[in-house]
Length: 327
Ligand SMILES: [Zn+2]
Image (cartoon, rainbow, N blue to C red; front, side, top):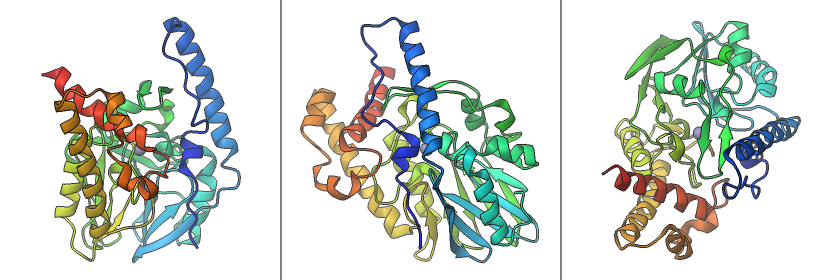
């Protein structure tokens, strides 16, 4: 039995609460937002008490781990444990216990971060202290080191503590040769963030897509750090090119999927993006586009995750209009 926890609670404990951006000084705003962040972090961690880590097999020695936050991947074998993403700090012990249950010696030899978001890198500090080598794209490391702003939720995110910064980075890609597989990790152009990478287990025919793929739900596109709907679609196209009908595709959020599931996601996001692009070209404002509900036909199933329809429209619109500002 798999559990799918409400990611929104862990990522966004107060969904309706936004720090105001108008009518207050910059200092007052940032103090208020810092306070919100602390509250947010504390509330989020309190909600993790009951989280269980569940595993689903996706190949020999290959697992997806579900808990709260981004889906993790694990390769366990003679060369040690290779872990993809590590959720939140209070879950580290439970994640390690699950890995041992699956045959791991306890401490991952390598931890690969697919991108910098807190629900994917929150265990870094704990795991680095245990001796794991943390690996990520160089932009992911750079983004972890600074404060960032989530434009969709108007939330400031604090840097990751320095003990959790990756000590090994790559630019284009790298390959891990372990546990009988060649695991190719490669960077894609700005998509969900500017530092996303895809993990391809070439022999096992398994791909971990990180948050480039939200299976069956509208995605977060982090426009404050270079995210863009066109980039997400282009990255998914690269994943599709590597896939056949047997490929297991692990999304960052949602159940384990495949090429058909990815194609459906691309179709939905692609059609919504084209509608918004057309509306912008016709001179419509964001508010007008949101009111016209360009996502309506998919909202009942795709709009029930932690990204609601107006937020998706905001993020797609933001990326497209940033293009125009740059020209
Ligand atoms: Zn993410």
